[in-house]
Image (cartoon, rainbow, N blue to C red; front, side, top):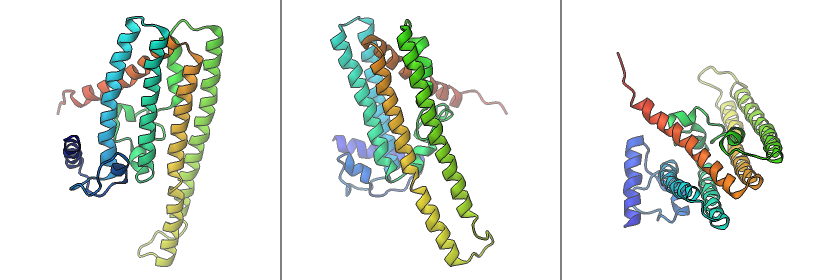
Length: 261
């Protein structure tokens, strides 16, 4: 019954977004039989799985918020925080599977709300921006913690800049390949196919950029929680979740805004 419900949900999403149906390696990864009716593209299945992940994430945040407000013991609260970090790892793994077959879907950000897409960086958020907002949300912090957070933010910024420069270089290199021969039509077919072959090879490196960006997000999240106490970590998880929740709310309000001719 669960598989049938999921298939119906996938097909509904596919019709709404205009995707063609096809066999899916991502479906196989999630235990869905590939021969089951008209299965959709990996991108559509990713969108459905991400929506399910987000729903579970919101449920976990409600439980964590209640745990913090009830002032439960450190050991019990630590379990809540560790579960939240493990849940974050799940979406990283989900994105990693899609990157193998449709990295452009991750980069386009169409699986995010419009307001979230305004702040996207290589298929996700900038981890340095997350660190920046933490100190004001979980005060008080010791001087040692503040210095450690500042150091983490600087090293994260440097890693982000290196990845951004690498992606800019790839874009420029790809553009140079495209215009390396005359753009007149019809083109010399032999030269044209050689250009496309080189361009395809360069595009294949995009998956690596997404993986490195997600790895940086993963490392930053875990390093952040190593610098904080259990209660501070719980509050930081809630603050980050609320930040993205407000972006999603902003998107909904924007879509529903009154329009005047």
